[in-house]
Length: 356
Image (tube, rainbow, N blue to C red; front, top):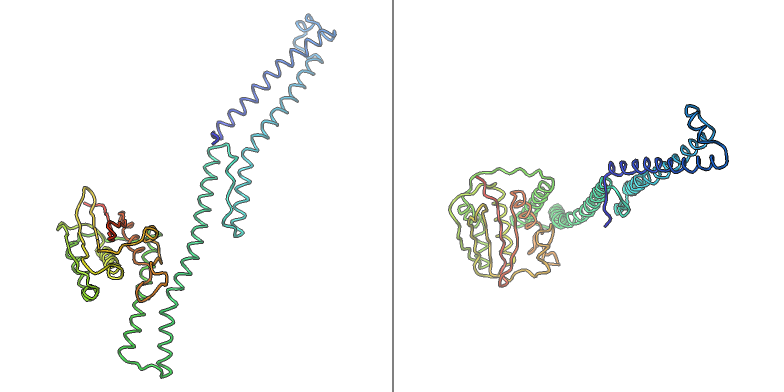
């Protein structure tokens, strides 16, 4: 990698080279011109000593040659220096024009940069272009995924309501519960998307308060009592009693998503939920009894709309936003979340900083 210097240093070096070159050239040229003039008899040493206040034609020759050659040297060095600065600016202009015309893959060529300031500018521009391209690609993926998630419940709602109007379906309690279930699914989807959007734009406001996590966990488990019993999953709590400072509603949302995840995927058995304080962090573990998640899927767990079920079965797979929302809420709390797979058991570990 070529070392780069600053613009001010390059200007100083260039001007010093011009000054030194012209000075040395003037001395050498003057020496040869005056020697030649004395040899051919144009001037004598005595005339130079007597008439030093008047310009001789040899003086004019020397002065004109110095001015001309000094100008040529300055132009050559100046043009070379200008090319160093103009070329990367042209690269930037070309890349910006292509991006404005829709070619988001365009990048400024930074392989021939000699200035640290311009190199940093090019690097920042290319980073910005990369982020812009990624944002647009992500927006396309999100739009397609959201359209997919909305299509099924809206189609069901439209079909059932149209069936009621046409007399195909009876407006009974079972039908209304089915329609309400679809509306609740849409409501959860909208809320999850809103949470992710707020976190991504750093607009999620957290209401910090002292929370008894043991009581909060018991409350959430009560909501899932029937489903846990049906899935033959027995929750086991091992929670330290000291309260923590966090957003109660958001941490409740995290617990609900992780317990929901265990009900969908875990084998029958124990669901151990434990928490403790380690140094300046509060640690939460939620561990089930398998079967675990294959290694090739683990790096995508917290990506929006990711499901293990490739069929995207609504009855079993949800919207694919649960763990993405959990990750977003933990990040908003300035914490970390990771998935572990010891002995083919799924363990989610959440670490949040302890606030005084």
